[in-house]
Amino acid sequence: MNWQSRIARLFGVAEGEAKPVLTGATLFFVMFAGYFMLRPVRETMGVAGGVDNLQWLFTGTFLATLAAMPLFGWIASKVPRRRILPWTFAFFAVNLALFAIGFQSDPDNLWIARTFYIWISVFNLIAISVIWSVCVDLFPNSQARRLFALMAAGASLGGLVGPLLGIALVGPIGHAGLLWLAAALLLVGIGIARNLQRWRDAQPVRDELTAQARARPLGGHPFAGITTVLKSPYLMGISLFVLLLASVSTFLYFEQARLVELNFPNRADQTRVFGTIDAIVQSLTILSQLFITGRLVQRLGLAALLVAVPVVTMLGFLWLALAPTFAVLAVVMVVRRFGEYAFVRPGREMLFTVVPTEAKYKAKNFIDSVVYRGADAVSGWAKALVDMLAQHPALAALIGAGIALAWALTGAGLARAQNRIVEQEAMAEGFDVAGEGLRR
Image (cartoon, rainbow, N blue to C red; front, side, top):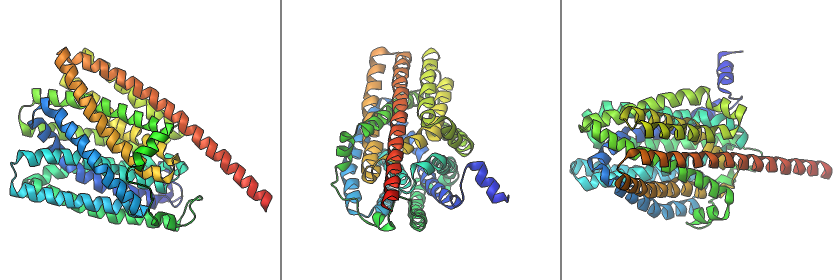
């Protein structure tokens, strides 16, 4: 056994899969490196506007997401599905260039800063969702269970390298320079995605007749995402799962902002704190995605990815209710975010491998962006209301624990539903094979 075979066996990669795994991981890497270069700056801008005003930024983000959805739906309806990612990334690269010009011409403009905060919050969800849409379109469920965590490791590596690039380059090239670099990385991502499509063209899956299927537009209308979700109990369940995930994240995010503002009044110190948390999260995530996540889902099933993190998060909220300090909050934030990237996100994407092709793009993007940001906005106002009425962080933590418990129960239900769909498809495929044999 040569060294390549040993590495493939170590990571659970079958023959011929190393190239697409590396390509997918590289695609995630360039996108996340660009985004995480800018994330600490975004967080600092959010705190600078006042923690009491964060719910307004969340509401603005939700409204901007609603405005973006018809545009994305139109692109997905009219553009061949193998070109949805190139068109989307090119559009966002142009946006980044415009923001870079704005930062260069008026670097202290507060409204440009607020607009950028909202825009990047929309951009990151849509861009990430589109990459995952391509992956769930190109990889069947059997491969997804083994390979998605490995490809997601590229995202974690990008999330680790991105803040380091930002720290190293913000002095020499400034904020505008970071935006130009992020735009360039998106253009590189377009070329990488094309390589992934060409690999699948050369090795089509069993149910894919030819690459011509991906060369045709999906059709439908710009609002097909929401109508598809409303007609499917399974997709509604995924929407509920994402809504609860986003609500938990928002409660912790607001607590993080409050405690960081309280303990680190200097903006530079705030950026360093946010960057340090990001670096710790991504380091832990990479190790898990490479050596734990894939083996965990193969041995314990999808439910392990969708339930474990919500349960741990619930316990973290209870701990935070008893000890509402920054140290406890930092531990809970790291565990929750690391668990989401390493376990929940790959598991959540596996849920989409069994839905129709159109749903993998339109319904998925609607859930990942509109549902997520809608939950952000609602839970942001709810957190502000709880803080105003209770004047004690323990109540918000207890409510967060209840939301996390509902999140865990929803994940368990979705794992069972996905297993039923897989079993039904296997039975149907078996009948088709038997019928073909009789016809022959």
